[in-house]
Image (cartoon, rainbow, N blue to C red; front, side):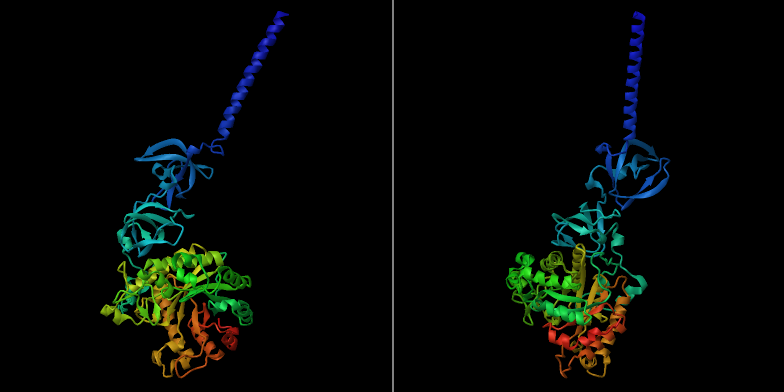
Length: 565
Protein backbone atom coordinates (compact mmCIF):
# COMPACT_ATOMS: atom_id res chain seq x y z
CA UNK A 1 0.00 0.00 0.00
CA UNK A 2 2.77 2.38 0.95
CA UNK A 3 4.67 1.40 -2.18
CA UNK A 4 1.72 2.41 -4.46
CA UNK A 5 1.32 5.77 -2.72
CA UNK A 6 5.04 6.58 -3.17
CA UNK A 7 4.77 5.68 -6.86
CA UNK A 8 1.84 8.09 -7.32
CA UNK A 9 3.75 10.92 -5.60
CA UNK A 10 6.74 10.43 -7.90
CA UNK A 11 4.46 10.50 -10.96
CA UNK A 12 2.79 13.73 -9.76
CA UNK A 13 6.15 15.43 -9.25
CA UNK A 14 7.27 14.34 -12.71
CA UNK A 15 4.12 15.73 -14.31
CA UNK A 16 4.56 19.02 -12.45
CA UNK A 17 8.16 19.30 -13.72
CA UNK A 18 7.01 18.64 -17.29
CA UNK A 19 4.29 21.27 -16.92
CA UNK A 20 6.77 23.83 -15.60
CA UNK A 21 9.12 23.04 -18.49
CA UNK A 22 6.32 23.52 -21.03
CA UNK A 23 5.32 26.83 -19.46
CA UNK A 24 8.91 28.11 -19.60
CA UNK A 25 9.25 26.90 -23.20
CA UNK A 26 6.02 28.68 -24.18
CA UNK A 27 7.21 31.92 -22.61
CA UNK A 28 10.53 31.75 -24.49
CA UNK A 29 8.77 31.02 -27.80
CA UNK A 30 6.29 33.84 -27.23
CA UNK A 31 9.05 36.33 -26.47
CA UNK A 32 11.02 35.34 -29.55
CA UNK A 33 7.96 35.51 -31.77
CA UNK A 34 7.27 39.11 -30.69
CA UNK A 35 10.72 40.50 -31.51
CA UNK A 36 10.33 43.28 -34.07
CA UNK A 37 6.52 43.22 -33.88
CA UNK A 38 4.03 45.62 -32.35
CA UNK A 39 5.34 45.24 -28.82
CA UNK A 40 8.83 46.49 -29.60
CA UNK A 41 10.29 48.60 -26.83
CA UNK A 42 9.77 52.17 -28.00
CA UNK A 43 13.27 53.04 -26.85
CA UNK A 44 14.48 51.01 -29.86
CA UNK A 45 12.70 53.22 -32.41
CA UNK A 46 15.09 55.62 -34.16
CA UNK A 47 15.05 57.90 -37.24
CA UNK A 48 17.36 58.02 -40.23
CA UNK A 49 19.39 61.23 -40.15
CA UNK A 50 21.74 62.73 -42.72
CA UNK A 51 22.93 65.91 -44.41
CA UNK A 52 21.50 64.49 -47.66
CA UNK A 53 17.96 63.47 -48.62
CA UNK A 54 18.95 59.78 -48.55
CA UNK A 55 21.59 57.56 -47.01
CA UNK A 56 22.91 54.02 -47.66
CA UNK A 57 21.78 50.70 -46.22
CA UNK A 58 24.04 47.62 -46.16
CA UNK A 59 23.33 43.92 -45.83
CA UNK A 60 24.81 41.94 -42.94
CA UNK A 61 27.93 41.30 -45.03
CA UNK A 62 28.51 45.06 -45.50
CA UNK A 63 27.40 45.13 -49.13
CA UNK A 64 25.63 48.32 -50.19
CA UNK A 65 22.05 47.33 -51.06
CA UNK A 66 19.70 50.34 -51.20
CA UNK A 67 19.01 53.93 -50.21
CA UNK A 68 16.69 55.01 -47.42
CA UNK A 69 15.08 58.45 -47.04
CA UNK A 70 16.09 60.47 -44.03
CA UNK A 71 13.32 60.80 -41.50
CA UNK A 72 12.30 57.15 -41.95
CA UNK A 73 11.41 55.39 -38.68
CA UNK A 74 13.28 52.11 -38.10
CA UNK A 75 13.96 49.64 -35.26
CA UNK A 76 17.46 49.72 -33.78
CA UNK A 77 19.12 46.71 -32.12
CA UNK A 78 21.91 46.97 -29.58
CA UNK A 79 24.46 45.55 -31.95
CA UNK A 80 27.50 47.33 -33.33
CA UNK A 81 30.52 46.37 -35.33
CA UNK A 82 33.42 48.42 -36.61
CA UNK A 83 34.80 48.07 -40.13
CA UNK A 84 37.44 50.40 -41.61
CA UNK A 85 36.88 52.96 -38.84
CA UNK A 86 33.14 53.06 -39.51
CA UNK A 87 30.80 51.87 -36.78
CA UNK A 88 27.74 50.06 -38.11
CA UNK A 89 24.57 49.31 -36.19
CA UNK A 90 21.82 46.81 -36.95
CA UNK A 91 18.31 48.00 -37.85
CA UNK A 92 15.07 46.46 -39.03
CA UNK A 93 13.26 48.17 -41.91
CA UNK A 94 10.32 46.83 -43.94
CA UNK A 95 10.65 43.44 -42.25
CA UNK A 96 14.35 42.99 -43.15
CA UNK A 97 17.60 43.40 -41.23
CA UNK A 98 20.27 45.86 -42.40
CA UNK A 99 23.43 47.56 -41.24
CA UNK A 100 23.73 51.35 -41.31
CA UNK A 101 26.42 53.83 -40.36
CA UNK A 102 25.82 54.63 -36.70
CA UNK A 103 26.10 58.35 -37.52
CA UNK A 104 22.91 58.06 -39.59
CA UNK A 105 20.47 57.22 -36.79
CA UNK A 106 19.03 59.43 -34.07
CA UNK A 107 16.33 59.21 -31.42
CA UNK A 108 15.46 62.91 -31.73
CA UNK A 109 13.38 64.25 -34.63
CA UNK A 110 15.05 67.64 -34.42
CA UNK A 111 18.39 65.96 -35.21
CA UNK A 112 17.21 64.24 -38.41
CA UNK A 113 18.53 67.09 -40.58
CA UNK A 114 22.30 67.38 -40.12
CA UNK A 115 23.12 70.36 -42.34
CA UNK A 116 24.89 73.09 -40.36
CA UNK A 117 25.46 75.77 -42.98
CA UNK A 118 24.34 76.41 -46.56
CA UNK A 119 24.56 79.09 -49.24
CA UNK A 120 21.86 81.15 -50.94
CA UNK A 121 21.39 80.36 -54.65
CA UNK A 122 19.18 83.36 -55.47
CA UNK A 123 17.79 86.32 -53.55
CA UNK A 124 15.04 84.88 -51.39
CA UNK A 125 12.56 85.72 -48.64
CA UNK A 126 13.11 84.84 -44.97
CA UNK A 127 9.79 84.02 -43.26
CA UNK A 128 8.99 84.80 -39.63
CA UNK A 129 7.38 81.39 -39.16
CA UNK A 130 6.68 78.25 -41.16
CA UNK A 131 2.88 78.55 -41.36
CA UNK A 132 2.15 82.03 -42.72
CA UNK A 133 3.47 84.45 -45.35
CA UNK A 134 4.81 86.88 -42.74
CA UNK A 135 8.24 88.21 -43.73
CA UNK A 136 11.34 88.59 -41.58
CA UNK A 137 13.72 89.79 -44.29
CA UNK A 138 15.84 88.91 -47.33
CA UNK A 139 18.99 86.86 -47.92
CA UNK A 140 20.96 87.43 -51.10
CA UNK A 141 22.69 85.24 -53.65
CA UNK A 142 26.02 83.90 -52.36
CA UNK A 143 25.34 84.53 -48.66
CA UNK A 144 26.17 81.81 -46.12
CA UNK A 145 23.43 80.94 -43.64
CA UNK A 146 23.57 78.93 -40.42
CA UNK A 147 21.02 76.08 -40.25
CA UNK A 148 19.37 75.62 -36.85
CA UNK A 149 16.39 73.43 -37.74
CA UNK A 150 13.66 72.72 -40.26
CA UNK A 151 9.86 72.74 -40.51
CA UNK A 152 9.08 69.37 -42.12
CA UNK A 153 10.41 66.73 -44.47
CA UNK A 154 8.96 65.92 -47.86
CA UNK A 155 8.27 62.31 -48.85
CA UNK A 156 11.67 62.03 -50.58
CA UNK A 157 13.60 63.11 -47.47
CA UNK A 158 14.15 66.67 -48.66
CA UNK A 159 13.48 69.62 -46.38
CA UNK A 160 10.56 71.95 -47.07
CA UNK A 161 11.95 74.99 -45.24
CA UNK A 162 15.18 75.33 -43.28
CA UNK A 163 15.20 77.29 -40.06
CA UNK A 164 18.13 79.70 -40.16
CA UNK A 165 19.78 82.32 -38.00
CA UNK A 166 18.93 85.77 -39.35
CA UNK A 167 20.61 88.74 -37.70
CA UNK A 168 19.58 88.49 -34.04
CA UNK A 169 16.57 86.32 -34.80
CA UNK A 170 15.59 83.08 -36.55
CA UNK A 171 13.45 82.53 -39.61
CA UNK A 172 12.62 80.09 -42.40
CA UNK A 173 13.81 79.78 -46.00
CA UNK A 174 12.59 77.38 -48.67
CA UNK A 175 15.20 74.67 -49.16
CA UNK A 176 15.10 74.93 -52.96
CA UNK A 177 16.91 78.27 -52.73
CA UNK A 178 19.84 76.92 -50.71
CA UNK A 179 22.84 74.86 -51.87
CA UNK A 180 25.85 73.20 -50.20
CA UNK A 181 28.74 75.35 -51.45
CA UNK A 182 29.51 78.98 -52.16
CA UNK A 183 30.75 78.00 -55.61
CA UNK A 184 27.42 76.41 -56.46
CA UNK A 185 25.50 79.39 -55.08
CA UNK A 186 27.27 81.79 -57.43
CA UNK A 187 26.45 79.83 -60.58
CA UNK A 188 23.95 81.18 -63.11
CA UNK A 189 21.70 79.27 -65.46
CA UNK A 190 23.28 79.30 -68.91
CA UNK A 191 21.74 76.62 -71.09
CA UNK A 192 21.58 77.23 -74.87
CA UNK A 193 23.56 80.46 -74.71
CA UNK A 194 21.04 82.23 -72.48
CA UNK A 195 23.54 84.48 -70.70
CA UNK A 196 25.08 85.67 -73.97
CA UNK A 197 21.62 86.58 -75.25
CA UNK A 198 20.72 88.40 -72.02
CA UNK A 199 24.02 90.29 -71.95
CA UNK A 200 22.89 92.30 -74.97
CA UNK A 201 20.16 93.89 -72.83
CA UNK A 202 21.88 96.57 -70.81
CA UNK A 203 20.37 98.45 -67.88
CA UNK A 204 19.64 101.53 -69.96
CA UNK A 205 16.37 102.50 -68.26
CA UNK A 206 17.29 101.85 -64.63
CA UNK A 207 15.03 98.81 -64.22
CA UNK A 208 17.82 96.33 -63.62
CA UNK A 209 20.19 93.99 -65.45
CA UNK A 210 18.77 90.92 -67.17
CA UNK A 211 21.82 88.77 -66.34
CA UNK A 212 21.35 89.43 -62.59
CA UNK A 213 18.00 87.63 -62.54
CA UNK A 214 17.28 83.97 -61.83
CA UNK A 215 16.55 81.54 -64.68
CA UNK A 216 17.06 78.18 -63.02
CA UNK A 217 14.09 75.83 -63.58
CA UNK A 218 11.19 76.53 -61.24
CA UNK A 219 8.80 73.66 -60.60
CA UNK A 220 5.29 74.43 -61.87
CA UNK A 221 2.74 72.43 -59.89
CA UNK A 222 -0.35 70.70 -61.21
CA UNK A 223 -2.91 70.21 -58.46
CA UNK A 224 -5.06 67.10 -58.68
CA UNK A 225 -7.99 68.80 -56.95
CA UNK A 226 -7.58 72.08 -58.83
CA UNK A 227 -7.09 71.50 -62.53
CA UNK A 228 -6.31 74.57 -64.63
CA UNK A 229 -8.03 74.37 -68.04
CA UNK A 230 -5.61 74.13 -70.97
CA UNK A 231 -7.35 77.16 -72.45
CA UNK A 232 -8.90 79.72 -70.09
CA UNK A 233 -11.48 82.03 -71.74
CA UNK A 234 -12.53 84.59 -69.13
CA UNK A 235 -14.78 87.60 -68.57
CA UNK A 236 -13.41 90.26 -66.23
CA UNK A 237 -15.81 91.21 -63.39
CA UNK A 238 -14.98 94.16 -61.15
CA UNK A 239 -15.79 94.65 -57.47
CA UNK A 240 -19.20 96.25 -58.10
CA UNK A 241 -20.24 94.13 -61.09
CA UNK A 242 -19.96 90.91 -59.06
CA UNK A 243 -23.46 91.72 -57.72
CA UNK A 244 -24.77 90.74 -61.17
CA UNK A 245 -23.00 87.38 -61.23
CA UNK A 246 -26.14 85.56 -62.47
CA UNK A 247 -26.16 87.64 -65.66
CA UNK A 248 -22.44 87.01 -66.28
CA UNK A 249 -22.95 83.27 -65.74
CA UNK A 250 -25.85 83.23 -68.20
CA UNK A 251 -23.93 85.15 -70.87
CA UNK A 252 -20.79 83.07 -70.31
CA UNK A 253 -22.70 79.87 -70.98
CA UNK A 254 -23.84 81.32 -74.32
CA UNK A 255 -20.35 82.55 -75.21
CA UNK A 256 -17.92 79.63 -74.75
CA UNK A 257 -16.50 81.35 -71.66
CA UNK A 258 -15.19 78.96 -69.00
CA UNK A 259 -13.70 81.30 -66.39
CA UNK A 260 -14.04 84.63 -64.61
CA UNK A 261 -11.44 87.10 -63.38
CA UNK A 262 -13.02 88.68 -60.29
CA UNK A 263 -11.58 91.61 -58.35
CA UNK A 264 -10.43 91.00 -54.78
CA UNK A 265 -8.78 94.40 -54.46
CA UNK A 266 -8.41 97.15 -57.04
CA UNK A 267 -6.97 100.54 -56.14
CA UNK A 268 -9.63 102.36 -54.05
CA UNK A 269 -12.07 99.51 -54.79
CA UNK A 270 -11.59 96.72 -52.24
CA UNK A 271 -14.13 94.03 -53.07
CA UNK A 272 -15.07 92.90 -49.55
CA UNK A 273 -14.33 93.57 -45.89
CA UNK A 274 -11.51 91.08 -45.47
CA UNK A 275 -10.07 90.11 -42.08
CA UNK A 276 -6.61 90.57 -43.59
CA UNK A 277 -7.54 94.12 -44.59
CA UNK A 278 -8.77 94.69 -41.04
CA UNK A 279 -5.33 93.63 -39.77
CA UNK A 280 -3.12 95.39 -42.34
CA UNK A 281 -5.14 98.23 -43.89
CA UNK A 282 -8.19 99.44 -42.03
CA UNK A 283 -8.94 102.03 -44.73
CA UNK A 284 -9.27 99.31 -47.36
CA UNK A 285 -11.50 97.43 -44.90
CA UNK A 286 -13.72 100.44 -44.27
CA UNK A 287 -14.17 101.13 -48.00
CA UNK A 288 -15.14 97.58 -48.95
CA UNK A 289 -17.82 97.45 -51.64
CA UNK A 290 -19.34 94.14 -50.57
CA UNK A 291 -19.93 92.31 -47.33
CA UNK A 292 -17.61 89.30 -47.02
CA UNK A 293 -20.37 86.69 -46.72
CA UNK A 294 -22.35 88.22 -49.58
CA UNK A 295 -19.27 88.28 -51.83
CA UNK A 296 -18.43 84.70 -50.90
CA UNK A 297 -21.93 83.52 -51.88
CA UNK A 298 -21.73 85.32 -55.23
CA UNK A 299 -18.36 83.76 -56.05
CA UNK A 300 -19.60 80.35 -54.93
CA UNK A 301 -22.46 80.58 -57.45
CA UNK A 302 -19.93 80.80 -60.26
CA UNK A 303 -17.81 77.99 -58.84
CA UNK A 304 -20.83 75.74 -58.42
CA UNK A 305 -21.60 76.28 -62.11
CA UNK A 306 -18.17 74.86 -62.98
CA UNK A 307 -16.30 78.06 -63.86
CA UNK A 308 -12.56 78.40 -63.17
CA UNK A 309 -12.14 81.38 -60.83
CA UNK A 310 -9.26 83.85 -60.82
CA UNK A 311 -9.04 86.45 -58.04
CA UNK A 312 -7.38 89.72 -59.12
CA UNK A 313 -5.34 91.85 -56.71
CA UNK A 314 -3.87 95.25 -57.56
CA UNK A 315 -0.58 95.04 -55.71
CA UNK A 316 1.79 98.02 -55.69
CA UNK A 317 -0.74 100.77 -56.42
CA UNK A 318 -2.87 101.28 -53.33
CA UNK A 319 -3.99 104.69 -52.04
CA UNK A 320 -5.64 103.22 -48.95
CA UNK A 321 -2.63 101.17 -47.89
CA UNK A 322 -0.42 104.26 -48.18
CA UNK A 323 -2.94 106.20 -46.07
CA UNK A 324 -2.56 103.55 -43.37
CA UNK A 325 1.22 103.05 -43.79
CA UNK A 326 2.84 106.22 -45.04
CA UNK A 327 6.25 104.74 -44.19
CA UNK A 328 5.82 102.26 -47.08
CA UNK A 329 5.16 104.89 -49.74
CA UNK A 330 7.35 106.16 -52.52
CA UNK A 331 8.20 109.65 -51.20
CA UNK A 332 8.59 113.04 -52.83
CA UNK A 333 11.44 115.46 -52.06
CA UNK A 334 9.54 116.71 -49.00
CA UNK A 335 9.36 113.19 -47.57
CA UNK A 336 5.62 112.89 -48.21
CA UNK A 337 3.89 110.16 -50.25
CA UNK A 338 4.47 110.81 -53.94
CA UNK A 339 1.30 111.40 -55.96
CA UNK A 340 1.70 109.71 -59.34
CA UNK A 341 -1.18 110.41 -61.72
CA UNK A 342 -3.59 110.83 -58.79
CA UNK A 343 -2.49 107.57 -57.16
CA UNK A 344 -0.18 106.61 -54.32
CA UNK A 345 2.21 103.69 -54.58
CA UNK A 346 3.68 101.66 -51.74
CA UNK A 347 7.19 100.96 -52.96
CA UNK A 348 7.66 97.45 -54.35
CA UNK A 349 10.82 97.26 -52.20
CA UNK A 350 8.73 97.27 -48.99
CA UNK A 351 8.05 93.84 -47.48
CA UNK A 352 4.98 94.86 -45.47
CA UNK A 353 3.05 95.56 -48.67
CA UNK A 354 4.22 92.19 -50.08
CA UNK A 355 2.96 90.49 -46.94
CA UNK A 356 -0.40 92.28 -47.02
CA UNK A 357 -1.18 91.32 -50.60
CA UNK A 358 -0.06 87.72 -50.30
CA UNK A 359 -1.86 87.15 -47.00
CA UNK A 360 -4.95 88.64 -48.68
CA UNK A 361 -4.48 86.17 -51.54
CA UNK A 362 -4.09 83.23 -49.17
CA UNK A 363 -7.28 84.22 -47.36
CA UNK A 364 -9.14 84.38 -50.70
CA UNK A 365 -7.98 80.87 -51.59
CA UNK A 366 -8.79 79.36 -48.19
CA UNK A 367 -12.00 81.21 -47.35
CA UNK A 368 -13.56 81.92 -50.76
CA UNK A 369 -12.20 79.13 -52.94
CA UNK A 370 -10.38 80.87 -55.81
CA UNK A 371 -8.50 78.50 -58.12
CA UNK A 372 -5.88 81.09 -58.97
CA UNK A 373 -4.65 84.47 -57.76
CA UNK A 374 -3.74 87.11 -60.32
CA UNK A 375 -1.47 89.93 -59.19
CA UNK A 376 -1.72 93.14 -61.21
CA UNK A 377 0.50 96.22 -60.92
CA UNK A 378 3.48 94.07 -59.96
CA UNK A 379 5.87 96.84 -60.81
CA UNK A 380 7.16 100.27 -59.92
CA UNK A 381 5.38 103.32 -61.36
CA UNK A 382 6.23 104.08 -64.98
CA UNK A 383 7.70 107.26 -66.47
CA UNK A 384 9.61 108.22 -63.31
CA UNK A 385 13.23 107.81 -64.49
CA UNK A 386 14.02 111.55 -64.54
CA UNK A 387 12.46 112.00 -61.09
CA UNK A 388 14.58 109.17 -59.72
CA UNK A 389 17.78 110.49 -61.27
CA UNK A 390 17.20 114.00 -59.93
CA UNK A 391 16.38 112.72 -56.45
CA UNK A 392 12.87 114.16 -56.66
CA UNK A 393 11.42 110.85 -55.46
CA UNK A 394 12.73 108.22 -53.07
CA UNK A 395 11.88 104.56 -53.68
CA UNK A 396 13.10 103.55 -50.19
CA UNK A 397 15.29 100.69 -51.39
CA UNK A 398 15.87 99.00 -48.01
CA UNK A 399 17.84 95.99 -49.30
CA UNK A 400 19.66 97.76 -52.15
CA UNK A 401 17.97 95.68 -54.84
CA UNK A 402 17.57 96.31 -58.54
CA UNK A 403 13.93 96.84 -59.48
CA UNK A 404 13.67 93.75 -61.66
CA UNK A 405 15.25 91.62 -58.94
CA UNK A 406 12.75 92.85 -56.35
CA UNK A 407 9.86 92.11 -58.72
CA UNK A 408 11.09 88.58 -59.48
CA UNK A 409 11.70 87.88 -55.78
CA UNK A 410 8.15 89.00 -55.04
CA UNK A 411 6.81 86.61 -57.70
CA UNK A 412 8.77 83.75 -56.10
CA UNK A 413 7.44 84.68 -52.65
CA UNK A 414 3.85 84.89 -53.90
CA UNK A 415 4.04 81.64 -55.88
CA UNK A 416 5.64 79.68 -53.02
CA UNK A 417 3.11 80.95 -50.49
CA UNK A 418 0.05 80.28 -52.64
CA UNK A 419 1.23 76.94 -54.04
CA UNK A 420 1.24 75.70 -50.44
CA UNK A 421 -2.55 76.06 -50.51
CA UNK A 422 -3.05 74.24 -53.81
CA UNK A 423 -3.74 77.32 -55.97
CA UNK A 424 -1.99 78.91 -58.96
CA UNK A 425 -0.38 82.33 -59.46
CA UNK A 426 -0.61 84.61 -62.48
CA UNK A 427 1.14 87.93 -63.02
CA UNK A 428 -0.10 90.79 -65.20
CA UNK A 429 2.60 92.64 -67.16
CA UNK A 430 2.76 95.52 -69.58
CA UNK A 431 3.07 94.54 -73.23
CA UNK A 432 6.36 96.45 -73.29
CA UNK A 433 8.10 93.94 -71.03
CA UNK A 434 8.37 91.48 -73.93
CA UNK A 435 10.87 93.89 -75.54
CA UNK A 436 14.62 93.31 -75.67
CA UNK A 437 15.39 95.28 -72.52
CA UNK A 438 14.47 95.41 -68.85
CA UNK A 439 11.70 97.97 -68.44
CA UNK A 440 12.17 101.06 -66.30
CA UNK A 441 9.51 99.82 -63.86
CA UNK A 442 11.22 96.46 -63.26
CA UNK A 443 9.24 94.01 -65.38
CA UNK A 444 11.19 91.63 -67.62
CA UNK A 445 9.18 88.92 -69.36
CA UNK A 446 11.63 86.02 -69.14
CA UNK A 447 12.31 86.49 -65.41
CA UNK A 448 8.62 86.62 -64.47
CA UNK A 449 7.47 83.87 -66.85
CA UNK A 450 10.13 81.47 -65.57
CA UNK A 451 8.56 81.57 -62.08
CA UNK A 452 4.82 82.32 -62.41
CA UNK A 453 2.27 79.68 -63.41
CA UNK A 454 0.63 82.12 -65.82
CA UNK A 455 1.88 85.36 -67.36
CA UNK A 456 -0.70 87.78 -68.70
CA UNK A 457 0.45 90.51 -71.03
CA UNK A 458 -1.70 93.59 -71.58
CA UNK A 459 -0.90 94.43 -75.22
CA UNK A 460 -3.91 96.65 -75.84
CA UNK A 461 -3.55 97.96 -79.40
CA UNK A 462 -4.45 101.53 -78.40
CA UNK A 463 -1.60 101.51 -75.85
CA UNK A 464 1.07 101.17 -78.55
CA UNK A 465 2.58 104.12 -80.41
CA UNK A 466 0.85 104.89 -83.72
CA UNK A 467 3.28 102.97 -85.93
CA UNK A 468 4.76 100.45 -83.50
CA UNK A 469 7.03 97.81 -85.08
CA UNK A 470 7.17 99.92 -88.26
CA UNK A 471 3.56 99.12 -89.19
CA UNK A 472 2.39 101.62 -91.79
CA UNK A 473 -1.21 101.80 -90.54
CA UNK A 474 -2.15 103.25 -87.17
CA UNK A 475 -1.79 100.10 -85.14
CA UNK A 476 -5.06 100.13 -83.20
CA UNK A 477 -6.89 100.12 -86.54
CA UNK A 478 -5.17 96.83 -87.41
CA UNK A 479 -5.13 94.77 -84.18
CA UNK A 480 -4.10 91.55 -85.93
CA UNK A 481 -0.92 93.11 -87.29
CA UNK A 482 0.26 94.69 -84.06
CA UNK A 483 -0.54 91.68 -81.88
CA UNK A 484 1.02 89.31 -84.39
CA UNK A 485 4.29 91.26 -84.10
CA UNK A 486 4.00 91.49 -80.32
CA UNK A 487 3.28 87.77 -80.12
CA UNK A 488 6.48 86.96 -81.98
CA UNK A 489 8.52 88.81 -79.32
CA UNK A 490 6.70 86.93 -76.57
CA UNK A 491 7.29 83.58 -78.29
CA UNK A 492 11.02 84.32 -78.39
CA UNK A 493 11.16 85.18 -74.67
CA UNK A 494 9.22 82.01 -73.86
CA UNK A 495 11.68 79.89 -75.83
CA UNK A 496 14.83 81.00 -73.99
CA UNK A 497 13.80 79.95 -70.46
CA UNK A 498 13.52 76.42 -69.03
CA UNK A 499 10.14 76.70 -67.28
CA UNK A 500 7.99 79.26 -69.12
CA UNK A 501 4.57 80.14 -67.75
CA UNK A 502 1.31 79.59 -69.55
CA UNK A 503 0.62 82.69 -71.68
CA UNK A 504 -2.94 83.91 -71.12
CA UNK A 505 -3.39 87.40 -72.55
CA UNK A 506 -5.63 90.34 -71.78
CA UNK A 507 -7.47 91.49 -74.92
CA UNK A 508 -8.82 94.97 -75.55
CA UNK A 509 -12.60 94.67 -75.21
CA UNK A 510 -13.47 98.35 -75.42
CA UNK A 511 -13.48 100.95 -78.18
CA UNK A 512 -10.13 102.66 -78.65
CA UNK A 513 -9.40 105.59 -76.38
CA UNK A 514 -7.08 107.22 -78.95
CA UNK A 515 -8.09 108.90 -82.16
CA UNK A 516 -8.95 107.83 -84.73
CA UNK A 517 -11.56 106.08 -82.60
CA UNK A 518 -12.07 102.47 -83.57
CA UNK A 519 -15.08 100.45 -82.52
CA UNK A 520 -13.83 97.11 -81.24
CA UNK A 521 -16.55 94.84 -82.55
CA UNK A 522 -16.45 91.04 -82.65
CA UNK A 523 -14.25 91.01 -85.77
CA UNK A 524 -11.60 93.19 -84.09
CA UNK A 525 -11.74 91.00 -80.95
CA UNK A 526 -11.31 87.92 -83.15
CA UNK A 527 -8.31 89.52 -84.85
CA UNK A 528 -6.62 89.97 -81.47
CA UNK A 529 -7.18 86.37 -80.43
CA UNK A 530 -6.13 84.93 -83.81
CA UNK A 531 -2.86 86.88 -83.74
CA UNK A 532 -2.01 85.53 -80.29
CA UNK A 533 -2.87 81.92 -81.11
CA UNK A 534 -1.00 82.06 -84.41
CA UNK A 535 2.15 82.71 -82.37
CA UNK A 536 1.52 79.70 -80.14
CA UNK A 537 0.18 81.79 -77.25
CA UNK A 538 -2.78 79.48 -76.74
CA UNK A 539 -3.28 79.51 -72.95
CA UNK A 540 -6.39 81.60 -73.38
CA UNK A 541 -7.58 85.19 -73.15
CA UNK A 542 -9.30 87.55 -70.72
CA UNK A 543 -11.57 90.47 -71.63
CA UNK A 544 -10.30 93.80 -70.37
CA UNK A 545 -13.18 96.20 -69.98
CA UNK A 546 -12.74 98.25 -66.82
CA UNK A 547 -16.49 98.63 -66.25
CA UNK A 548 -17.10 94.91 -66.93
CA UNK A 549 -19.80 96.01 -69.36
CA UNK A 550 -22.35 93.26 -69.95
CA UNK A 551 -23.60 95.25 -72.92
CA UNK A 552 -20.15 95.21 -74.53
CA UNK A 553 -19.63 91.53 -73.77
CA UNK A 554 -22.98 90.73 -75.42
CA UNK A 555 -22.15 92.93 -78.39
CA UNK A 556 -18.93 91.04 -79.18
CA UNK A 557 -19.77 87.55 -77.96
CA UNK A 558 -19.62 86.13 -81.47
CA UNK A 559 -15.83 86.41 -81.10
CA UNK A 560 -15.88 84.21 -78.02
CA UNK A 561 -17.98 81.50 -79.66
CA UNK A 562 -15.25 80.80 -82.21
CA UNK A 563 -12.71 78.02 -81.74
CA UNK A 564 -9.14 79.31 -82.14
CA UNK A 565 -7.00 76.50 -80.74
